[in-house]
Length: 193
Image 1 (spheres, rainbow, N blue to C red):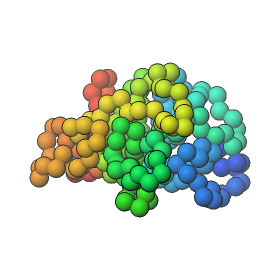
Image 2 (image 1 turned 60 degrees about the horizontal axis):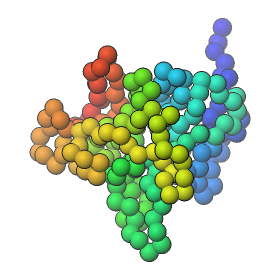
Image 3 (image 1 turned 135 degrees about the horizontal axis):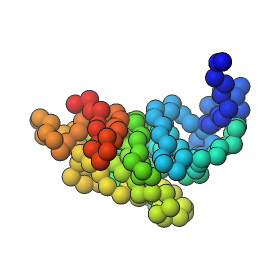
Image 4 (image 1 turned 180 degrees about the horizontal axis):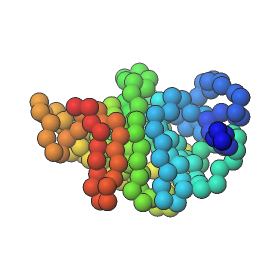
């Protein structure tokens, strides 16, 4: 028996294939170039996409068509008028943005350990960890995304150089990681550099 799709996310139905017009990073009802997905042990789904973010769909039960994400991860707090564009990476951001505010790179793989989410933040040369969803601060205009709990491969939340700026990699650095997985408590990372 051939498998049949029962859920569609990122479009309104099974036959629509449209691109959102004038989306923002906070738009929750579409996916743009999805790159990775993972479920946590509670059945929550995380999907990274080309808009420098991860969409969180609270599970384990999903609407069959058109369900919007419950939360968007990787979006910085809004910039006050007249202030410069946020320089990536930060405690809230995923991916990379140029001086004009255009997205130039997005995270790829997502993986979990228990209910903790890990994201291969490829353009920022790091792996980030988010706390369990029940511990996230409430979504607000001032803070649309939860803060990143920990960062691996860099010396801090705002560092983002390949191999921490060193000419050679070592056991503490990454360069454009694409994904990861856990074997027990060991983290395994697919790293391009």
